[in-house]
Length: 156
Image (cartoon, rainbow, N blue to C red; front, side):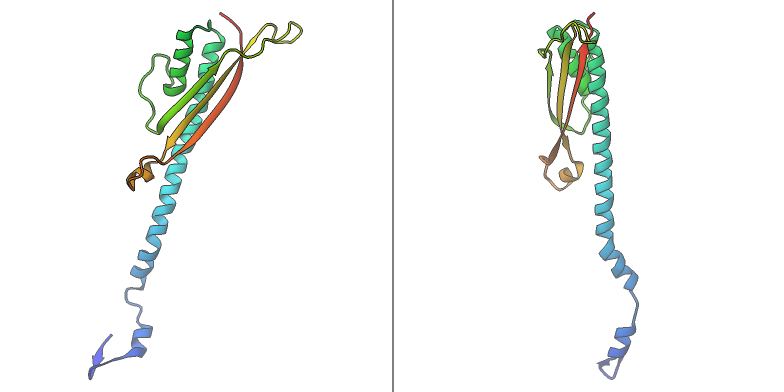
């Protein structure tokens, strides 16, 4: 814009495109950041769900072939949380967890193909913690992820 004789040229102001790309960038950049953060958190949640499903299935395979003592059930809970029976560090996406292993389910009749088998049910729920919410100071933003699996106890 130029000033000639103390008056702004309004026609040139309407046609001037200097800085238009900067304004478009400033308007769209927050939207791009939000989309990127959403896809990042969705990927983390998908990995957490996949890991929990695999750990629950590993714990069930472990319990299906061993005696059902309280020590073995505690090891199965560690398998669900960390992936190994000896324990270890929990994944960073777990805010809190509740794991219930039910070994008191019904016993099948002898005419069933699972003759004499006892059902073991693992009900694992973790509270997935969002990192983006922590960035904004809300460390309690979680969503529960729950997996329930049944398997027949085959014995030692």
